Length: 186
Image 1 (cartoon, rainbow, N blue to C red):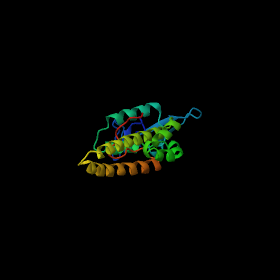
Image 2: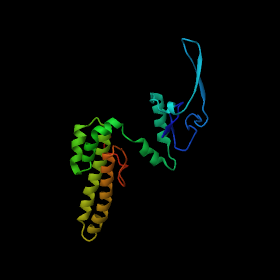
Image 3: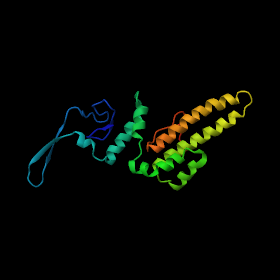
Image 4: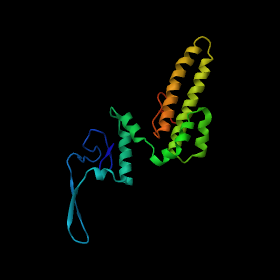
């Protein structure tokens, strides 16, 4: 993931030009800074060190605006890369994140760690998965084809469940397959 050192907008992997401001990261731009004490000017180019700096409010807004417009062929992959939780929040709440995927137990982490973005995300995923489980169970009671619905639905639910547990244990905020784009808890 690269960000423009000039305006802070997200630059997709493989691109060298910023979509927001047109800054070309392949060609180092020189910037002069005057030292107030000695009057000397120092030159330095934009490079890796500039990308490591903290985002300012304006840079974050610019990146968020770009994220909303991002509809390219790999937009979903870039979105999942950008959706990783802050390390401290994820590291502190991984166990509770896993608990979110075990049936109605998503309520426990949600109520005890309401301020955690990581927990809210995984509690939402757990709620969606739980509702899908209820729907499959209801459809399983239909005479004739209910067993087929339960079998196919069960396979999809198992894949989504394992994916969610792996994501939560890894500290990643990544949507579960089939149901991950549904948001019920914000």
